[in-house]
Picture 1 (tube, rainbow, N blue to C red):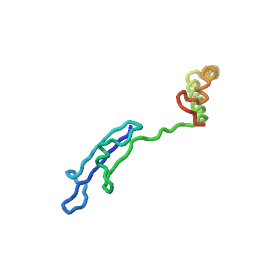
Picture 2: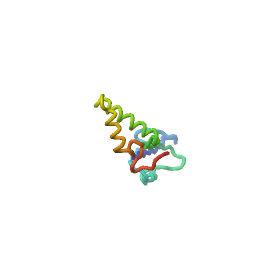
Picture 3: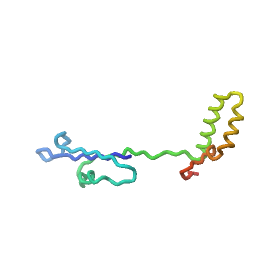
Picture 4: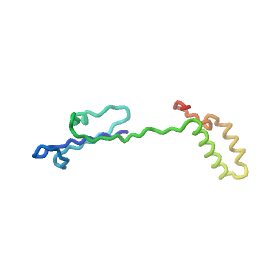
Length: 114
């Protein structure tokens, strides 16, 4: 989701621009990923005029496959050590054998990054 805003500043009596509350228009529009600038915002954008805008989208940070595999194995090992202090290795080896793709860092619906 992205957020678009536009501020259109009015003119003071002497002709200079001013962000007085009564002199400017604020428009807020929310869009879904992959869509262009909404027409309401486009109507306020004029060449040479002052506008303010930002996007709330942050790129998704994905770990490389090797780092993800190490992280998954370490987390599961620590969970099993806490739950079964004497026999954690047996459970750990059984889980590694049962779900090798998961513990090798494979993402089911995404392309791997390595």
